[in-house]
Structures are given as C-alpha cells and as structure tokens.
Length: 123
Image 1 (cartoon, rainbow, N blue to C red):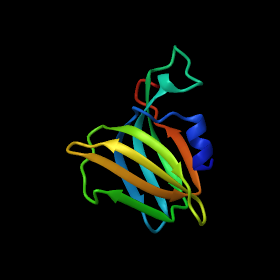
Image 2: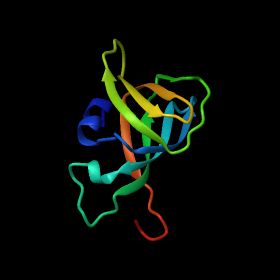
Image 3: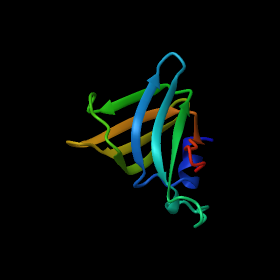
Image 4: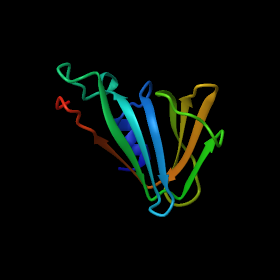
C-alpha cells in the first residue's frame, strides 16, 4: 500500500521502534516495531494492546536519518507525515524519541507493508 494510504489506515503514534535495517541493494527498509494495537481503528479488545511486527518499505529511492548515527532503544514514534515531493514514490517523515535527542527518518518509498511477528504464545 502507498505510504499516504498506510498512514490513513494505521496510527503509528506512540509505537516503539526496536530496529532499523536498510538494504541498499534490494532498496528495502525494514523497521521492527511494537505497534500500539489499541490505537488502531480496527482494534478488538480481546487482542493484545501491543503487536510486534515489521514495517517493510519497498522500492526505497531515498533514505536519510538525522542524526546520521544514533541508538534505538524502544524509540517512541512522535510524528509521521507524508511530505510533498516531486518524483517517483512518496516521501514519508518519521520522528522518533531517541535516547539523547529526536531522530528524524526521511524515506522515499512506493509501498509499505505491515507484517505481524507471532510470539511463542501465539500472539
């Protein structure tokens, strides 16, 4: 799904980013996070409030972080915006609460996919 469509369906605010892995050859960014399920419009109260999963950004043509080097430690998502952009794909900006400062991720991508990671207890 396109980034602009994705952020209409999923609310990423307060979700926790655990890991980022960028593969320049495959043009793919994988973001492991704990999604705040209880903030989603489709949330069912019998489901867990948090869901571990991977956001996969495909066909990434641009990826930049500010600062360049940073440490993730369950970094909370503070803001997600799709920005105006001339070119292929869509430009998405994600602001995280880092250990020492805020972390800004700028990503140009054509598609985002959410994949849940099932834990040993089946959730």
